[in-house]
Image 1 (cartoon, protein in one colour):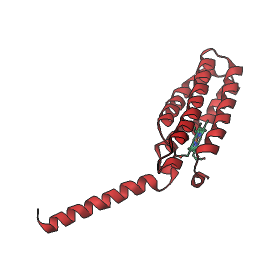
Image 2 (cartoon, rainbow, N blue to C red; image 1 turned 60 degrees about the horizontal axis):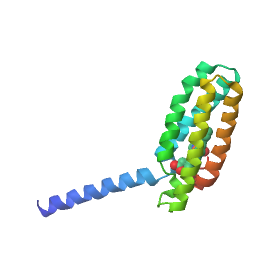
Image 3 (cartoon, rainbow, N blue to C red; image 1 turned 120 degrees about the vertical axis):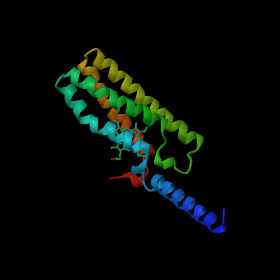
Image 4 (cartoon, rainbow, N blue to C red; image 1 turned 180 degrees about the vertical axis):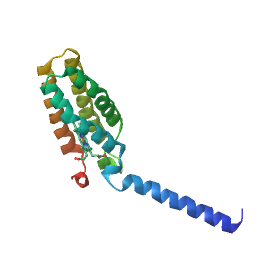
Length: 144
Ligand code: HEM
């Protein structure tokens, strides 16, 4: 390769590196976790309403997308840890996510049993875990 070509090639490499890094680090709204959170959030009200009106079929239809998003979210890391969380940060996140998934499992069982009261309770518990998760792991820059 000529010197000129080498310089061009490395310029392109540096530019594309810059773009990739910026796309991830720009804000918490660019994270895979954010996308999964949105999926869960968009289904919360329809789920609450389906349970309130005792429409278990509708509730059971909404559940898989929410659970899949929660499963993915549990494999991801918050933007807060973008420079690398400590082992104890990551363990704390994993613990809250494990609780989150356990509540979804309880919701799944309640819906399978058409137990409206237990389903409503699970929805409340999801709200509680959400509060804990956001308080501990949402970066300040993520506030709306
Ligand atoms: C029903 C439960 C939940 C709902 C509806 C929910 C919804 C959302 C929404 C809408 C956002 C986008 C920012 C905003 O609008 O506030 C968000 C961000 C976020 N949520 Fe949740 N969330 C839930 C549970 C959790 C749990 C359990 C955790 C942690 C274990 C968590 C951690 C985060 C983090 C860290 C962000 C910022 C994005 C990032 O850092 O990449 N959320 N969530």
